[in-house]
Image 1 (tube, helix red, strand yellow):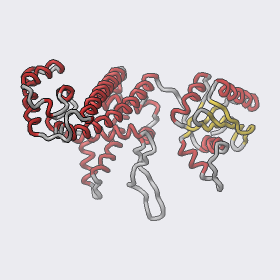
Image 2 (cartoon, one colour):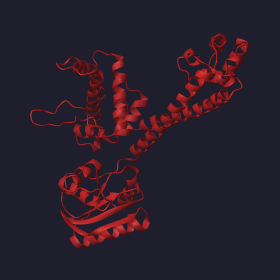
Image 3 (cartoon, helix red, strand yellow):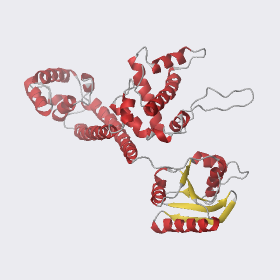
Image 4 (spheres, one colour):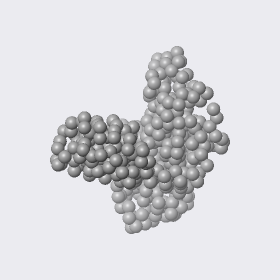
Amino acid sequence: MEGPIISIDVSNGCSHFRCFIDRNKAFGKVHKIKHDVDGFQYLLDCMERLNEKTNEEVCVVYEATGVYTKPLTRFLNKHKVRHYMVNPLQAAKMRKTDLHSKKTDKNDPNSIAKVYYDKDLYEYADEEPIYHTLRVMNRNYEDQLDHLRKYKVTFQNILCIVFPGYGSLFKNPYCDIALAILKKYPHPDMIRNKKPETVANYIEKHTCHHKDSCLKWAVKVIEYANKTYPGCDKDEIEVIELLRIIKELEVCIASCDTQLNEMVQLAEQLPNYFLILSIDGIGPNLACRILAEIGDIKRFGNTKQLISYAGIDPHISQSGDVDGLHLSISKKGNKRLRCLLYLAVTCNLRLKKENDPIQQFYKKKKQQSVPLKPKAARVACTNKLLRIIYGMCNNGCSYQK
């Protein structure tokens, strides 16, 4: 690529930039600006001076640094400035080509400019707002899931002291019945002498289950409470902590469910959601989250670009007699999308459908001359699944079995 550019090294709250007339032809020194009104106006002034000097359109090239680039990206979009994002790994690799490579804020714009002039970069284009909204909601949902996991671990640890083995009575220890009983009777001593009808009436009042079902659970819990031996008395701090963590757990579960429902409702406005949903093993949860991380699939020119974006492209390192093939995946991509695809493949394989393409591909990898281990075969299936998703969304066809 060629032409005048402004190369920017973006940091938290500030940036260093330098103007270039062309390859190895810098225009002025390195400048530092803050990400505020005055800083961006100064950047715009420098852009106009460079435009007057070259009589050519000036584009901006900068390193993708996550949330730090958002103010700059918004400013460039608002002023309709053509701009390109450079992967930080590309900039680092270019910097290391120098005999004496030094990582400084003043030198980084030079490395970013070299990437622009040596590589074919894709012009940054804003995707539709619905995809951006979905992605932000999914990231928030994953943060809530992290908090939920921590609450569950804490809950199980305290429960092992206060009411040992209680969770084993239920298929889901976090269901409404299990938590309702614990909120009223957090210690075995509190429920041992209770009548089953009393406990059943309480469960029926605070859940949506039928009275016969509530009575069955009341009898089961009372019988178990008479057998178990807790690790603390009913007036100790562990009981108070158990009640506190139950409240936190219920709030977090409700928040996760609400966020997921909103994501599904938003994703249902996109046709690709229903195409992804048609794949065996993928339900509404995975479908909307996979779509959120892929975004607008039309921005990928071919399957290889999408696979590279997910970081499941093969890592190849050849040297002499070593072919360097069949190594691990690069993992230089969207780790969230990679995780969701792996989860989708795992769910698909559990169904064990004979004519399913993913199932057949998995068996092929397990039975080839040099068979892959189960995990490696599933990773190979994520690559296959992503190719299928790309073809389905581009052709507008459902999953073929």
